[in-house]
Image (cartoon, rainbow, N blue to C red; front, side):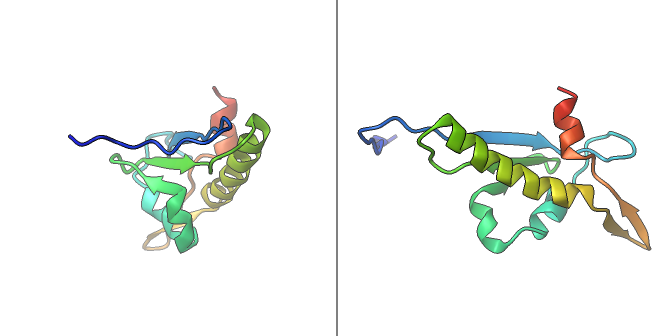
Length: 110
């Protein structure tokens, strides 16, 4: 394996990677619905919103931040985008709709 070069700088920075489990709002079972969420985000969002191996997981990444407050604001904005998507019912076909659990409710439960 070759050497991995680390791009350093003179100040400390931080970033956050958060992985969310998507669950069905009715059954509370894990929901393989990451693609429905990703399909509702703009194409350029693929740099910060990513699927995981498990189709019930969504990864969210902040940018490189200089302060904890900056990282919090960045993550909060991205969580609100996902929350707006997961709060809305999505169509399963044959006229059926499902709703993912409200993200705020899921976070409040921890």
